[in-house]
Length: 384
Image (cartoon, rainbow, N blue to C red):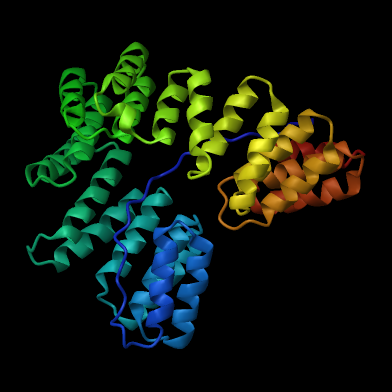
C-alpha cells in the first residue's frame, strides 16, 4: 500500500513583455524599478517584495499590479497572478497588459479557450495597429491554438508571424511542429531545416525539434537533428549549459557531466541535470550533493525537495525524507504539491505513525477527493 509518487513536470515557457512602470517621479517608482531588475535576473521572490513595496507606496498605479502578477506567473502561483491582474483592471478596465497577463495565466492553467478570448480582446483594442504587443499576442494565440488541436489555425497564425519576420526561427519551428502534429512530415521537416538555417547557434531550437520528433516516434530523425547541433560551426562557441543539454539528450553523459560542471557556477539549473544523470547511474550521493547545492541558490523549488525526499526513502531514511517533503510543502507555487503531500502521508506510515498518516490522508482527500489511490490508502489505514 506504500507507493511513493514521482512526477515529470510539463512546463510552459512564458516569454514576457515586462512593463516599464511609470515615470521616475511617480510614487513607488524606485521600488518598481528595483523589482524589474530582480525580475530580469530571475530573482522572483525578491521581485515580489519590491513590487509589493511599490504598491504599498502607490495603490493607484495598475502597472505595479501587472508587474507583480507577471512575477507570480514565473513562480507558478497562478491564483495570485489572477488576483493582481484583476486589481489592475479595477484601476483601469482597458489595461491591455493586465488582460494579456490573464490570458497568459489561463494558458498556463490549460484553459486555452479562455486564453484565446483574452488575447483576441486585447488584439481588438489595437484597432488594426500592429506593433510588438500585437505580435506577442499572436504568438501566445498560436500556442493556445496548438494546444487545442487547431493546427490549421495555428499554422495560419505562425505564417503571419513569419511573413512579418517576427522571431522567425522560433515560428518556423512552431509551424513545423503543427505540421508534424497533423501528420504532415515533409512540410514539418522543411520548416525545421529553415529554423536551423541561421549562423547564430540556438540550442533551444535544436532541442525543441528533437523533442517534437521524438514525441512523434521519429526517434532516429530526432537524434539526427540533435546531432547536427554539434557539427554547427558556431556550436562550440555556445555556452556550456546549452552544450550540456545536447550531450544529455544524446545520452553522452560523460561530456554532459563535464559541461554541466563547468556551467554550474553561473547556471544553477545545471545542478538539476547533474542530479538526473547521477540518479540514472545510481550515484545517489552525488545526486544528493547536486540537489543540496542547488538549494543553496534557490530554496523555493518544491521539486528538488521532493526528489531529495524520494532519495531518502530509497535509502530507508524516512525521518530525513519526511523533513524534505515538509520543506517542499512550505514552498509556494510548486507543481508537485500533490506528490509532496502524498509522500508526507506515506512517510508517516513508514515511520509507524498511523494516526498522523490517516490525518494526512484525510487532508489529502479534501484537496483531491477523486484520487482512487488515496481512497484505498485511507481504507487501509482505518484498519490500523
